[in-house]
Length: 399
Image (cartoon, rainbow, N blue to C red; front, top):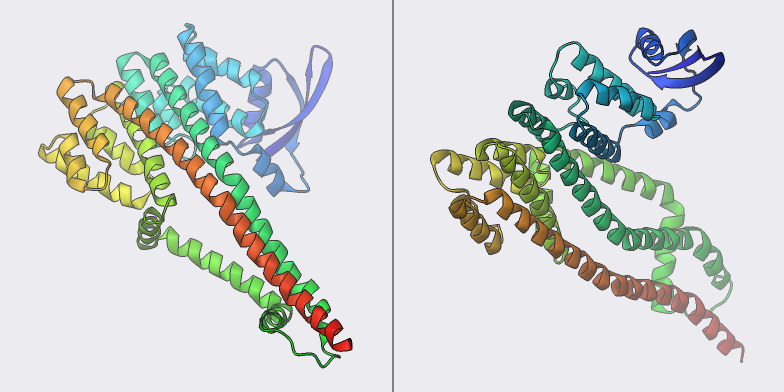
């Protein structure tokens, strides 16, 4: 909830809004920062959903928060001092409220990890487990530095994938949008010109007339149908069976399937490497991997691997028994276990998969761009032939 406040500091009046759970928390925050509260009330907003969207704490905010906290702890500051500094530096209301609540829990005597556990939407089990490991070993600053590096690499990797796929996705959406508008609203007016002339229409024009008449008559139903289909698809994929079927089919797609597989392995290997390097056992690390893996095929596979490792199998053997992982991952994991440097080996594998995924994205975009141009050319050519050919026949009949 957002609150509007008016406060006095050094003979200057300051106003603003802040996100908090209660009015008392806002007053407490202002006093702690040297302000004298004059008035505090609920903020009235014309577009609360829009404001909530912009104030929402995102993944980038958590990455920056982790990096700043790690640097300050590494410099020798206490955890409470770090949060006091962060409270003064952060201007985003949503993030400020989150930092205030965590700081309040720590000052009440709770551990940092237990305070983070109250916000699973921002701090997943991986984050909390690493912080708990750092608290137990007395190396919280080092663990947070590793965690910050992991989150930054994850953000950079996701950014590369999104930026590479943004162009073809925008072009495809724009292409279908323009074709829908043309066929539904523009083409019918052009085709009406041919009704008054006794001219034999070509097959392409007849097909276009049927499509155009259907689209112009039932376009509201088409839009409703698309909305219903997308909604039903989202609900089905939200179920375990639906998600498993979708992820299985996605892995079988040409070009896209290998990219999805490699992207999943990048996150899994890097996360497991950091967990093991931070003192977390392999079983606990696998349990966290199961929770953080988005693809249901790999999630079920890691569950099987967990059971095998629990029975005494090595991690490399368990990976090989699944039959869905690249041989290099199985071999390098086995070597890492034999040499006692599993965390370092997994980090190297993660870096290898990251380079492979970047190459796969470049190859995919290289293949998609000419394919889009071909499809766009065929669509435009079909429209031009369907519209121009009757005009040519009509002028020929006049001669």
